[in-house]
Amino acid sequence: MKEIKRYAAMLVLIIATGIGAAFSIKAAVGVGAWDAMTQTLGFLTGIKVGTIGMAINISCVAGQLVILRKDFKFRHLLQVPVSILLGMVVNFVLYNVLGDISFDSYLLRIAVLVSSYTLIAASVGAIMDLDAVTFALEGLCMAVAGKTGLKFSHIRQLVDVICIMLVLILVVTIKVPLTVREGTVIGMLMFGPMIGFFMKKSGPLFRKLNLSATCA
Image 1 (cartoon, one colour):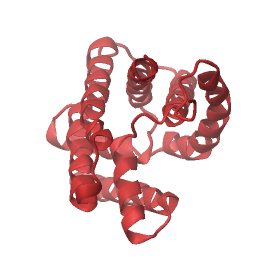
Image 2 (tube, rainbow, N blue to C red):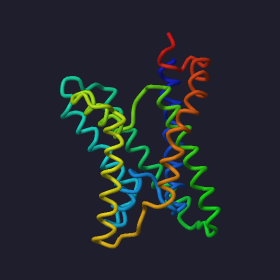
Image 3 (tube, one colour):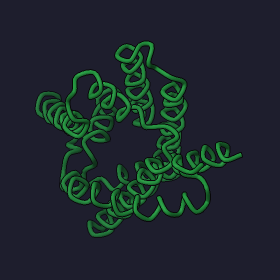
Image 4 (cartoon, rainbow, N blue to C red):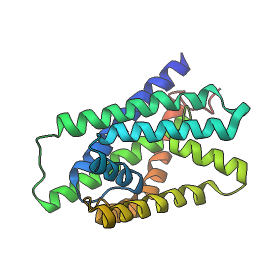
């Protein structure tokens, strides 16, 4: 029963993460490095952002399979439905719910961005506390860290740098809209501390509800 509750909570949190990601993109003042890359590839190919995210995330799961081999577990495979659900939520909210909505005021767009980052940070922090499954990109970075001995944080940061460089190259060479803007900087400054803040809140709550992985 505990595991059912944990995965139900995970489902809600993944949906919340997708909603936050869609609003951050709709704010149109720049997004995080990973989302900037998927949005830029969306401009380039005409494919929906969430669909591109699904494809890349599933590729990250495949990368884990190659790296981990016999250590690849069912837990890692769960990242595939998580990636699909996240992409579907992003597509539905961004193109169906928010499709005809525009945020004309710059201050409103900044407020929407900050609110969406807050929702994402709260959801991701809670997902990390639940420890039921990781997101595909983080899973790949952890797999690489485990095999190379490098720090996970350094590898994850390198991925962001690569994403931003790829976006800037595409902007300069193909003239797609710039997705790395002030919102990207805002996310870099607030996202990490906010995740830490919300993990301090969600951890005790999950232990009280007997949902934490550390609970007997």
